[in-house]
Every structure is written in structure tokens, then in C-alpha cells.
Amino acid sequence: MVYRNASMQDDTIRKGPWVEEEDERLAMFVTIMGERRWDSIAKASGLKRSGKSCRLRWMNYLRPDLKHGQMTIEEEHMILQLHERWGNKWSRIARRLPGRTDNEIKNYWRTHLRKRAQEQEQEKVQREIEIAMSSKPEKTMLRQDSDLSSQSTTSYESSNGSGGDKNMTMSEDVFIFSDYPFTMSPYETRLSDWISGSSSNNQTDTLKDQHGSSVEDSWFRYPAAAGEADGIWGNCSATLWNW
DNA sequence: AATGTTGACAACCGCTATGTT
DNA sequence: AAACATAGCGGTTGTCAACAT
Image (cartoon, rainbow, N blue to C red; front, side, top):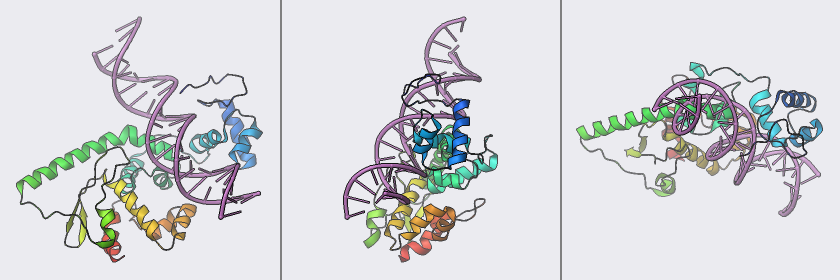
């Protein structure tokens, strides 16, 4: 990518880092025109930026309700937990962390937490292997029955880049997912998407997007952030198989 | 001191979903 | 219903500074 020099004076759309003057100008016009019609804001302000770029700058940096400091331990913990559940659903995670943006969380995850998560996962796998080696082989199978077979037998490509397939084992009539904290989430994501798609009442999704976590919670209730233990699968075992 | 590597962050891109005309 | 505009999302890349060799 070739960033144009910030001081360049021409009529082409500028890219690259914003300068203070641009920020002030953008903030002023957003105050006047509101947080919408970004193309109009870009034009009206005279900034040689795309509407998209203006929106991003405002959302990720200029919004007055943003926190700019370091992540706290609590926030870090929250990100780990939510990523464990939802995978790379950064905007969804960001909604639970007031003042933080999806971009910020995404970057923070990649630079601070991903490595740690991978190490934890590796340790866990190692432990499970050791346990498996020292005990009798467990009855392990994938659910193949009727309407769920296509989902349950579908391996997925990890969206968080870890590339691993979810290991699923089933005991009696309930799935037990190996508790790999950081490869679980993409499957959760797809499964919840699939469930949403299967729902005869698609309004649920619409409402979820428009109103944030409240409706989402009523549909796919997760326990409160701290100390939750069973999460999604507790509900799944109770409700999904009675679909 | 020069060069290479890594981490952190900002910004861009492509794509999809949603809203409007 | 279709076309277009706008907003939003997630992945990727560029820049810069700090650190290592």
C-alpha cells in the first residue's frame, strides 16, 4: 500500500494516517451532520477522504465515548472469554466492551492474546493426549442422525486462522466438545448462524442486529461475563436436540 | 552504527447486509 | 421487484518504534 503524504495538495482521495486538522474538521462536521451519510460528510467537509474512511476514523478514533488507554485486566479477561465463545466476531465482542472498538479488540487479540491462547490450547491438547494414553479408549463418534448430520459431520475451516477442525465426541445423546478454548469458537459461530438461519422467525436476527445484545441474549443466552462455566453448550444440549 | 526482526496499531480492502428510491 | 447507496464486518497490510543481532 502506498500512503500518500499527508501534506499533499491534490484532488485525489487521500489515504493513510490522518492529521490533526483533518480530525478536527471531521469531528466538527459529524457534530453538525450526525453519524450517517458519510459520503456527504466527506464532501461537505472538504476532506479529501472517502466517506468510508471518514466513518472508520470517527468510529475507531474520534468518537467521544471511546476509551483510549490500555486494556484493563478485566477487559482482557472479557475478550478471552467472549472470543472463546464467539470466535472472531469482533463487533459482537466490542458491543460488550463499552468504549472499545472492534478494530481495537481485533488488534489486541492478535498482538497480545492469540499467542497466549495458542500456548494454552497446546498445553491442553498435550494434557488430553496424556490422559487418553493412560486410560481406556473412549467411545468416540460423530452424530450422524437425520436432520443434523450435515452440520455435525462437516469439518470447518477455522476462521481465526488456527486451522484446526473441531473435535467432537458424543456420549449418550449429548455432544461433548473437547474443551479447546480457541478453536471452539468458529464452530459456535457457524452453528449459531445455522440455527438462526433455520429459525422460522428470522425477525430474531434482524432485531438482534438492530438492538444489540438484548435480543440476542434472549435467544441465545449466555451467562454473565465473569465466571460462566458452561456457556452455549449447556443450552444446546437442552434445546438444540429437541429442535 | 547499521541492519534485521518483532510488536503494536491505524487504516485499507473486499464483501455482505440493510436501507432507500 | 430491482437498482443503487450506505453501513458494517472481518481480514489484511503498511507504518513506525523498540529491540536484537
